[in-house]
Image 1 (cartoon, rainbow, N blue to C red):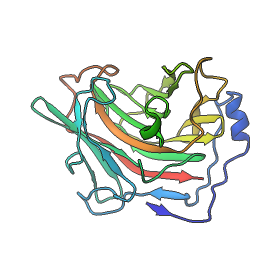
Image 2: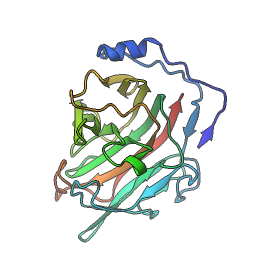
Image 3: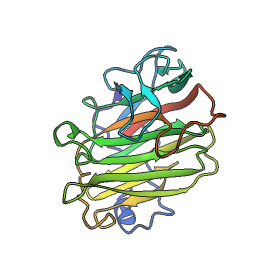
Length: 267
């Protein structure tokens, strides 16, 4: 992770107004083509672990109670640098056991406002579920869903639709979620830039610089608590199976890779 002190990316001021009005179809952030405030370029030798000063691992199975089939590990077989400036997150199958990786910046990097983007190539296959998302840094003290969850990018199965979502607590202590989705026929295995823009009371998700979904306190359910104006950390993972994508298909290829070219934050 490279930190460049003293530089703030210029985000168009009309962004907040445009998003709040949900007039997002043609809005772009116009983030400058200069260095980000913080950037992770995944430089290092092939087979090395990602930078431990910024990345850590969630390990184990189950995946948030969704009945997922994979077991997350910190093994190099499941997550490693490719020596060409990219992070590989790989789901592997060995008999009845499927392993994968979920990397997080918990306890190492959080942000509250600004633009976070990642350039990612996602795999296709029945039962595959790549994701790029955020959780509240206070999850250890308040638990889930009070921590809040922002799903910046999720694809399932053939990847023909993008999915974004918010998850949070209700006023009575329950769980609410609100999703947005849309067609994305050219997802394939190509790289695309997925991002989230955060400002007080505003969250917008982007694909290749264009806002595709937006949320404000006025757009969420009436009994929803808005818990997103606080530090949140980053997660990258390749889940397999579970309630949403369904079980792995016989034709699903293993190993299957989610490839991350970079992660950049503009404050």
